[in-house]
Amino acid sequence: MLCISPLDTTAENTYDDCRKEIIVDTSCGAAVLRGAHIYAPGVLAMESGTQLHEIVNVFADLPGKCKRGTATRYDCNEKIYVGVGEVLMQRHQLYNNKEQPASGIAVRMQTNVSGVPTLGDLSDEDALLQNLPSMVCVRVLDPQPGERILDMCAAPGNKTTHMAELMGNRGTIIALDNSANRVRSMKEKLANYTCITAHQFDATKAWDDSSVTDSIAPPFASGSFDRILLDAPCSGLGNRPQLCCNIKQPKVLQSYPHIQRNLLSQAVPLLRPGGILVYSTCTVTEAECEEIVSWALRKYTQLQLVDATPKLGAPGLPLPDLDAAQRDLLQRFGPSHENRMQNLDTVGFFIAKFQKVLD
Image (cartoon, rainbow, N blue to C red; front, side, top):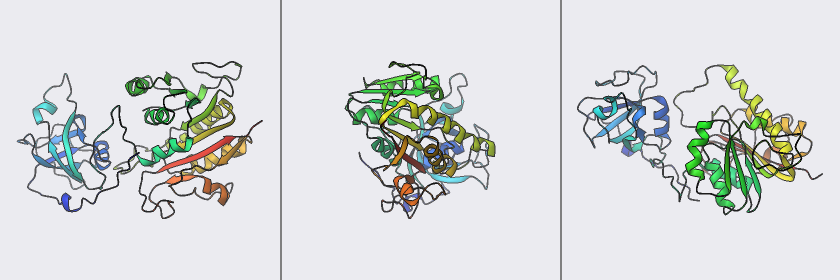
């Protein structure tokens, strides 16, 4: 595992008004700040006369008012400068073919203002690019060769393949996701591992309480798995940098704990006695993190909280139902003076590790 730290790029990101400008949408702009290059669908505007390999300023359209295909400089006080890049596609390639929209990298970023290294996607069959908390999450699960593992919400499959690597491709990993498109998209990634089987299936129905025999496909009988990873659907508020929030209504934010509790209610009976369950989210709300842990411990007396090692992030936040010793077993990632690793600055992420008590 190779960790790449943020870079000091302040000097290289001095704004030069003589350069032409590229305007991207806020999702693309946030991805740029996280180290991505710019793909064709994200380019909203490119000034006329922009040449191949020209160095350009890149701005994100914060108010969302830039018309796609704009050829003049976008006059907006709320656009935000995100970095400098090299043009790999011209206007006619981006906007002139309506029957087949452009794809591929349109602007190769050279530097960005966040300091995150501009690496693009380095993932291939030999390596996988992930943020640090996601890697720690799988290490906390600690899957062993020969075990039977359930990845309840597996797409895009990065943690699934990490597990397979740690297991030496020996054992069984069942990967579930309720989206057919997401399962299809991760099939190529998973194909390198004979131990992984992927299914399109709603994990809130993964437990078959009437079955007493093992199954190779969902739903599954009680006690079917040695370890379970529940990297739960969440509000995603830990993803950073972000330029906008897609959650516009409180009821949307409030819907996630209900889903997370439903998934945990399936995970607990599927875990064998003595087995390990890791619950994780890429968000920062107490309702989706510590409060879910507290709820699980109250509802399932056969669960006990155990140390989520290796511990790099901060302890959990204080709650009336979680004492200091329990909070110390948790990991909460993000910029915090309480992080156990000095100068750790990551996306927001949460990890809890449970063990099912032996009968």
